[in-house]
Length: 208
Ligand code: AP5
Ligand code: MG
Image (tube, rainbow, N blue to C red; front, side, top):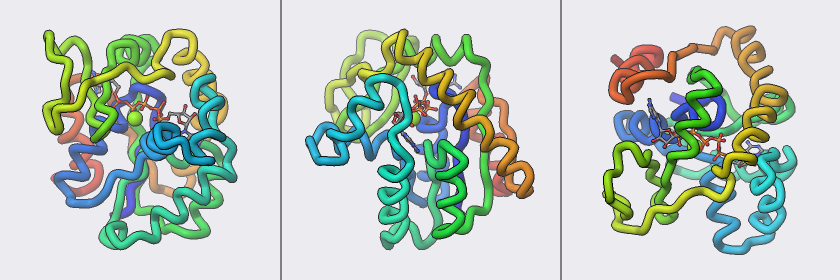
């Protein structure tokens, strides 16, 4: 099954994509993770993306579309995948239609005030991408999966988060209507217990 996770920053796309991918045995394709890895490795794509990401702006469509197109050709995508953070603009969604057939679009909906709280308390593993929240971490500073030190993302600082939310509402939210008109959209309330949200997504995907 080829799935898109749509939703504002902090909605839980990464958190739930990891769980659903594990349950369905398909890869999570997070364009944010791909770009952060490229920045860490100092590749030309990473260097190009850095100024946009640090400012909370989207990287140009032509940069990201080719990355996703190449990624979806890989063998592990044959049985399906979750796109987490792509597409983010109507031109990206139109380009995706040229090289992928999407079965379901899950929109994770959460109010802006709650998103800001979630993002400001997020800690991530730079090695495996696992995501945590300080409210559940206690005094733990390393990743449960791989033992790497957890950090705060550079673009999770307060002023950048507000930009990211503005960008979501102006450039990405129109995709809700785009996919609704194609009969693919399933809206899931992203507020509440993480296990319950996982269950609702599985149900929306017909996998419960
Ligand atoms: P990206 O990495 O995709 O960031 P984002 O969309 O802003 O989303 P986040 O990763 O911030 O949130 P999430 O929904 O994954 O939430 P999470 O599960 O971590 O993109 C970063 C940047 O890269 C962009 O700004 C852009 O510059 C660039 N980029 C990426 N893709 C692009 C594209 N296609 N085109 C152009 N540019 C692109 O959860 C957040 C926190 O909440 C965590 O701490 C988590 O533990 C907690 N949490 C999760 N669920 C719950 C719950 N139910 N209750 C309480 N807390 C919860
Ligand atoms: Mg994410």
